Amino acid sequence: MHDLVVANGTVVSPDQGVFEADVAATDGVVSAIGDPGSLDGERVVDASGKHVFPGVVDPHVHHGLFRPLDDDAASESRSGLVGGVTTTGNIFRRGGAYGDIMDEFFEAAEANYRHDYFFTLGLLSHDHAAEVPDIVDDLGITSFKWYMNYKLDVAEMFDLEQNLLDDVSDHFLRELADVDAPTTLAYHSENSEITNHLTDQLRAADATGYDLIVERFPGYAEAQSMVSGANLARQHDYDDDFYVVHVSAKETANELAALREQGYGVTGETCTHYLCLTRDECDDRHKINPPVRSEEHQDVLWERLADGTLSVVGTDHISNKRANKVGEDIWDSMWGSPSSATMLPLVLSEGYHEDRLSLRRVAQVTSANAAKAYDLYPKKGAIRVGSDADLAVVDLEETKTVTPDLLQSAADYTMYTGRDVTGWPTHTVVRGEVAYEHGDVVAERGRGTHVDRPIDADAE
Ligand SMILES: [Zn+2]
Image (cartoon, rainbow, N blue to C red; front, side, top):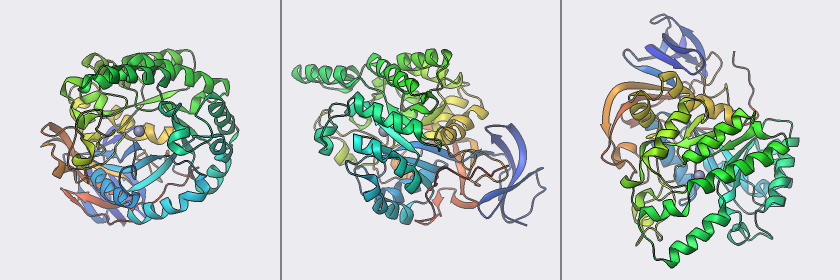
């Protein structure tokens, strides 16, 4: 007798394709996969007519940026469960030594997350570079962020001795290349010499409206920086672990394809807003860096996601109240918007249902590939015996209209309000326990836990 059986569903396995099966869980892990109707459980979730995906791994969220981490962990993991999210990667940066400050954040996270989580830490200084081996050994954190958008600002922002110039980047790349455990370096592509200059010009011209942020952050400044960063990583034989976050521009996606053709191991992520929005639909609620661009960019990103150039969809989720987020004008509005809960539904609605991605590809880009990029696989991102039993049971034909209430985030606005989206979880399972069912989040605060890395890769 298994603890839980998700029975009679159509399993969408990232590595094995689509097939009818029962999936059983015991002690938090997948304990059996068998013919439909063949497995017995203490609890049975009937998945007849539904599809069983691996739980969504959203590798790119910022919890605790505008609100305390304990509040965000509780409310934003609640929201994530509505959309089938079972693991998030919280990208996080501070000026001081991480060894001194992370206890406090682990405590807030452990007490409040309703699904599992990991951290990715910004490397801002030579001190951070020198701390890399200790972070990996002592904190179970193996992923790091390289912020090219703050290259010329970190000294002032974080009270550091110097900016994030290439000597610092070179230092942390050497440290990362030396670490025995697998690591990840997430790269924010932006040539900030160019974008800072454009920003000054646009300010002087009193430019306003969403178009101005598109002009501030042109695609070529994203693409050029990506190639430059990837090449420095390549010089340290570290390109396999170089991961480009939130690719927004066709130029970047195409340069990424060219690098991969040359043998670089680089991978990249795009976000749902670059796939599902165009600049004409955007206002201050959508102020995000990089910006949402035109349909032409959107089409290339879908193609590059389908052909394997881009391997992951993330969200860059930030929760905020509308009154804080939206200011007098777009200059005055804050960066970042909430979107973890809509990630899988939107990729299904506008990817699968629009014939841009197969179901199996959806499972890869929303779960398995992020787990691989961040060295969580096959503990996370797989439906296999021995893997964590993290599942999203989805009704592919259910249409819901997006509202803030539907998503249960602390944010009182969404980027997609009013949009009809088809393909929603009816149940989300976290390590073998139902955490969300039919509109109700039932997982308590503290149900989630940190995914220590390197993981024990003992799944079959
Ligand atoms: Zn981000």
